[in-house]
Length: 286
Image (cartoon, rainbow, N blue to C red):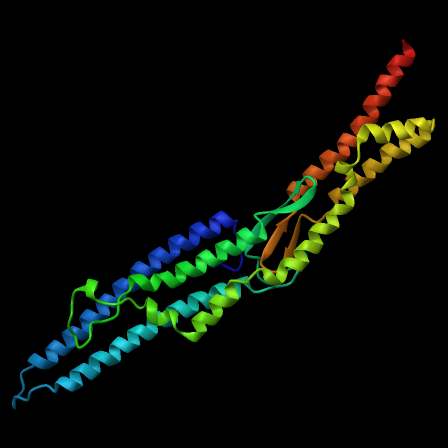
């Protein structure tokens, strides 16, 4: 989870699924290696030639086996916790606006979807992806099996995975619950930010032809018409000054698509006026 990089939702899901699959295979391999190593150590202890042959205490070997089996469980648990904590830290709310300490996690486009200004992907889609990632982390331990009791039962199909034990850990439960509401705290800020763009809603809500007809009924002079055209040029300039990025928590809101749509709407108003004026001028000359 690099702190200097943002991801689209699709990139995030693909990266996490690939990473969890790779790390699960590695952990399972290490788990089996350590289990075989401890089994070999116990075998060496049992078969090591001594001057005075002494049978190895069975309880002692079982205690040794159980000790390292528990250490392996704690290692898998720690890996799972660290993965969750890393995700939690990366999703943690950072500075808003244009400045940030860590680069926001998700790249999100702000778009005009008449009659509303929306996010793509939506907050619900982002939350669903985070939930999916958390579930993938938790599922890793389904493919990593507990050691056989007493250095026996080699058949992995007869063993239990670590998943059940890890799922009962209170810290795991707590962080999972926290992640299910990871973007909840940003909803109000995001809504307020999107609502700020509704100041331009007249660009797509009002009827251009009716607005032109209303203006012409007042018999405007050239200065009045020029001022009306200049109004939309000023609106375009204001749109151009909208910051390209606005950060809210783990979201990097890209305003490029919205700005393009707003500029298009403003241009259409100017085109409507100039086109109608041109038609009227042609009629007067005929």
